[in-house]
Image (cartoon, rainbow, N blue to C red; front, side, top):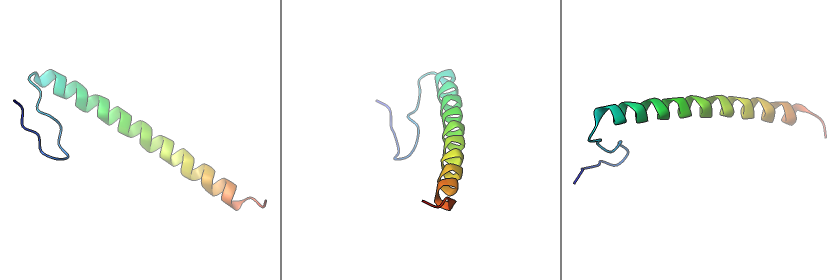
Length: 51
C-alpha cells in the first residue's frame, strides 16, 4: 500500500513514471497559464469597449 499526503503526488513504483507525470503536469500548467493570460487580455479588451 502506498502512502499519500494531501496535495502531494502519489509515490510511483517506477521513478521514470513519476518523472513523466511531473513533465506532463508542468506542460499542462504552462498551457493553463497561457490560456489564462489570453482570457485576461480578452476580458480587458471587452471591458474597455462601449456597449
